[in-house]
Length: 594
Image 1 (cartoon, rainbow, N blue to C red):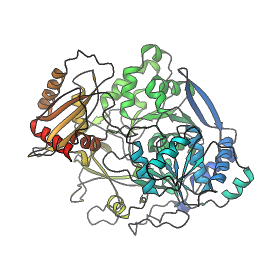
Image 2 (spheres, rainbow, N blue to C red):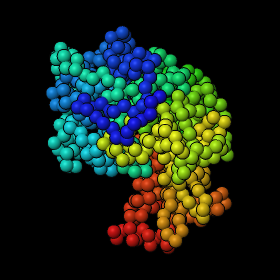
Image 3 (cartoon, rainbow, N blue to C red):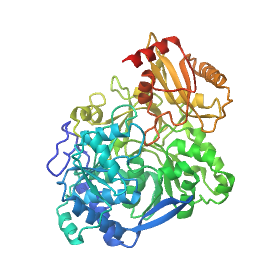
Image 4 (spheres, one colour):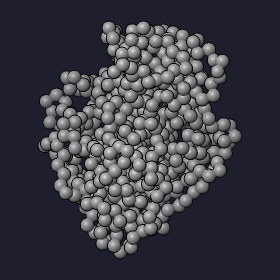
């Protein structure tokens, strides 16, 4: 493989990224196609009647299906691409903001067909800080257009206007189609360069402002091959789930992987899952999904909220690959899930822990053939072996590779790693051009801590989230799990350190919905403090019991610890009950005055 020779990303007028030293023969993957655009058009030409999408919409408590064939999807994407070309030039960035999974899929392919760069974002009506995030993405990507549907256009237009981006054109993806002949003529000019930018995947922002990861057609196809090889997904398979399509796990792992396989993406909404977790498992059972996945919290939710009668109606024997990823994996959760759904035919070996990140397009490690024992290396959950990737554990300070069993930063070199961040050459050089010792090979610095044991990768957490107390490194997810085990009334939690003469640990612990008002909250706080003291010899600077929904999460389910720390220090966290040290109270008081 050729080495990367520069640290910036050069782009021409067609939105192509400069070469970055990761190629396959003639720029083609095992599919024989140079771009995802060519691949999807070939799928439509070869099997126009084949089911591409099954979209499930909740009505009166049940999920109603709508089937879209490859021919129909291709025709709609071509028509929309023709209209899109009236407002943009090739290489322009286009926001994709849809609640409808069908409109999102059509819009994404339309961007590819038109030579535009798709920028998936959350649909309107999100969390309170949604406007701020969208405005940041519009500015960072210099988006010139937004694809939305008629039912959400007013909300999108108002959001853009109130954030200072009223000049961004809104194009309706569900407007009457233009003539197919015009669309086909326009599409003849679409680029077929594997190094052209397919889309920008904005990072979740769990530790910093979101940045746009450049995903080229080459890196997208390479990662699809890695996913298929690692997980054993087969051509024509049904793949899907409920994950948001503006997030990499939902977009790359569920929608695009199904289309790459020439199979069917079966998609329900995140709202339908949260409202009734059984919807997800019933979808897998009813539609014969062989691969589906979600973050750890979703498996825990199913264990707690899917009842015996619902389990009796499930057949999960055909669920070959149940991926868990997107956040630290708790082996106890997976063991409980395997036991709970064994009567429905779920095989324990179907549970596949994986690790990935947007900077690598998606998958870095994980395999359906990995050992069934989920732990090792001190009881830390493993995320399988590297998946078509060179994975090293490196000292983040000296940049020297560490031996097996030692914890360090996870560095990755793979064909699926993109060329860098959009319009951020300095950050691209710092993150995508890690060098081990005096080596010449470029590695992606993930910012995640991990350890390799017997060829399996164990992920400890974010490097920036590490809490140092009395010279010891503590991982916040360990503290959070310990706190959560104190009571069945506890939901998500977040742990972080606050400054002072010495770092103090603060725990924000949600109470589950429906918790009784006569609960001994003071006693629960005492129990949390005692448990952390006994297990980690940590004296907490504060324990706050808060309402459900207080702890922010990214779209992938990761706890936004940095954001919660800022809110706490600004005095913007309202507790049902709290016990906070005077020194920490003074920090919060000074934060309120700023």
